[in-house]
Length: 135
Image 1 (tube, rainbow, N blue to C red):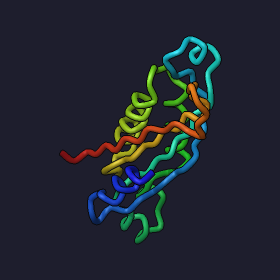
Image 2: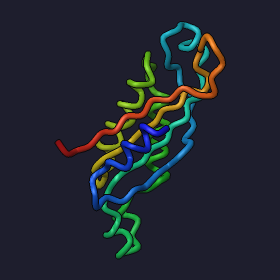
Image 3: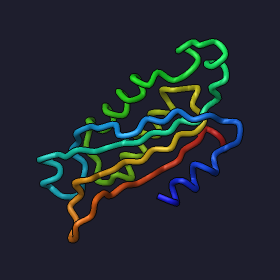
Image 4: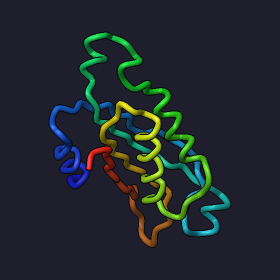
């Protein structure tokens, strides 16, 4: 968790955050055949970095992100065609967020795979990616 928090604290100054935690979807992602057949629950956290001052000043939904729309595109990305890796799923979700929400400058996506098949018991497996429009 420290690595993810370090990445968040390193975000560009002057940007505000909109965070959705625990978005749940059912997908058929994984490298094993049984994961593809049976599917499983995935949990996603998304933090969007953008300037929220226009929305705060105007109190206008059109000047920010519609949280419901954001959650819906995340679930749609979880539910569409299967991928082998949650790394690829996190990338897909990050790119969709940047493409569909033009106000977002940077997005951080964490994909949790709580049912990941592991040789030992673990509470969670998660991957975090951070993507930005800036070079």
